Amino acid sequence: MSATVETVHVALPGREYDIRIGEGLLARAGAEIGPLLRRPRVAILTDETVAALHLAAFRAGLGDIEAPAQALPAGEATKCWAQFGCAVEWLIEQKVERRDIVVALGGGVIGDLAGFAAAVLRRGVRFVQVPTTLLAQVDSSVGGKTGINSPQGKNLIGAFHQPSLVLADTGVLGTLAPRDFLAGYGEVVKYGLLGDAAFFEWLEAQGPALAAGDVAARIAAVKRSCEAKARIVERDETEQGDRALLNLGHTFGHALEAATGYSDRLLHGEGVAIGCALAFELSARMGLCAQEDPSRVRAHLDAMGMKKDLADIPGDLPDADGLIALMAQDKKVQDGRLRFILARGIGEAFVTAEADPALVRSILAEALAAR
Image 1 (cartoon, rainbow, N blue to C red):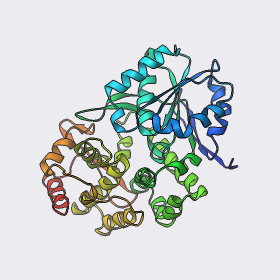
Image 2: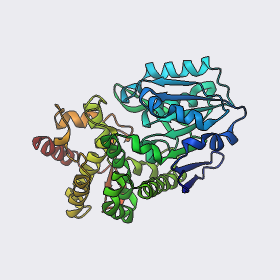
Image 3: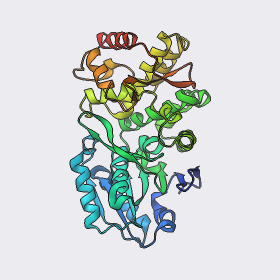
Image 4: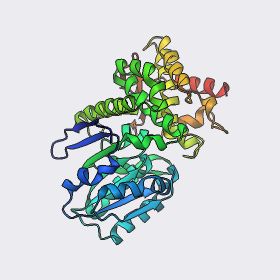
């Protein structure tokens, strides 16, 4: 195992927890999770893809801890009532008690669904996130947002329920397909763009090495992303203010995900990356940031081989009005007005409801026309 295991502490009073980051954490899962247990037993929710890759190693790492597991189908479509119901009923069949721990072993879909199941089972049991994708390690496993999708929009059903521990084994990132790794990288870039210009500059220099498998760069990027998210969550756990900054790129991105049916036509992190490019384009058109900023964002996404335009999404898309209608279902709507996360420059994002709807429509229409 790599000697380097980094710890980021999330200091929420009464709900504190550590994010452990490094290679080889699956192999020492028992040592990490054991101190939290009242009895030597956990219940694991995972998906079929992750189970084939990592379940045996995780169970071996748990040692003498009993660990029944349920594998759900892989993919965003699993974040639905039907699969959620299956997961909760399975946990009840396993006689999971209020003092037990549910383990979410997988990417963002499993983390969100398992966390929500833990939140409602017996009115709340503890859970541990063991994120196996870059996107989950830097974003969805941290901060306690859990939930499932509705046909009318993403993550509209859920609860805030903080994990008791996050184990981010960066070694498992080597099993990701390049597309899945880069989709997660969309969320990493977001942290630089929203509040840390120096981190974005570091990514411009280190991104290619990170994508190619550089261990130290991967640990550093996950740690910096988790630190950024932890500090924001500590200030605003339930998204009354600052936490909305974490949705940079998501207002556009979630609408694009809905437009593509939450399918593999567009992965979540890809939607976020395209959404960040659109948010910077809107910011520049509103005179908030330099004209060069959107170009710099798109140039970095391009250098990383990522999706950056609506033209990069295969298949048909709704027209500009159709996309705006999907955006109107977003959770960031307040008093009937859609809030955008815009930027005064790279690393200087802010939340506003002042975006001109005609300008938003025109930017989307132009992007669609370029397809």
